[in-house]
Length: 348
Image (cartoon, rainbow, N blue to C red):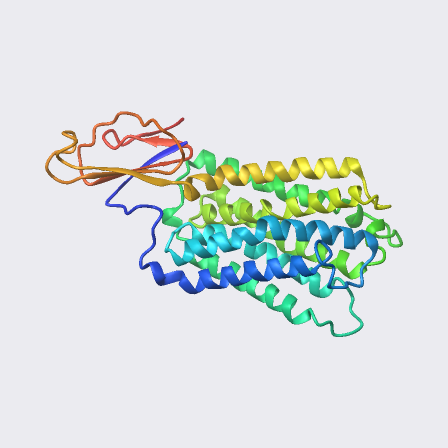
């Protein structure tokens, strides 16, 4: 846990003006409603959209749309409301579901190998474009100064963790990378080769390089490293859950290509990724202003002003430091404690 002291800082949960990212909030709500509509019309609910896909990939699509409807769409709407209300955490919450949408709807457009122009194509194209645009806008809107501080050791640890996540994705493609020239594709994708290669391209051409770049930025201590850490974890919190849901649906429907062992492994890994993301995001999402200390209520502050305490990690007890200079903002983050009087920090 970090305890960071910042002079003359504003509450970490507000951005000013509140209308600055109102358009981003509206776009996020539109994306959430689009995900809901697509999931309700797809094989998970109404099965009104007929995809020219094999049984295995249709089962995977059912699991994907369950996660989109029950988790990703509500996150989009939540992030949209936060953005409209002017919360600084809104772009952080927005990036994960937006990047998820762009990642998935590229597969919706390319994967089915349409021999005709489907009626659903405009909606899928719009959701892909909206997701990608929101992800770019969210990245630009994230204020690195409002993110929790990290010690250099913590940055390096998180950088190594990101390298492990990237290695995990690569490991799933080792058979393809080292396969012989005439070796077949995985059984569930042999009838849907475009779907397989679109996922292959996204994972190894986009996700893995972005994860490695974020890891190196953290290890080197660059300014944008913490920002990259949050957005990469935002993606890892959602996509692996959808992959686990795909495997679970395949097992539940007795898919010929299902594997109960693989479903268990993917579920455990997805829950681990989600837990790590929750731990990382919790101080920003659930941080709240505790109270303001005025000169009349705290003799330690003196007559020069007040001190604002902002909780960002759920910790209920702070070290009892005397606040000699005011106004002083004490912000609780992950990994270190900075004493405002002694000017030193230590890992907790």
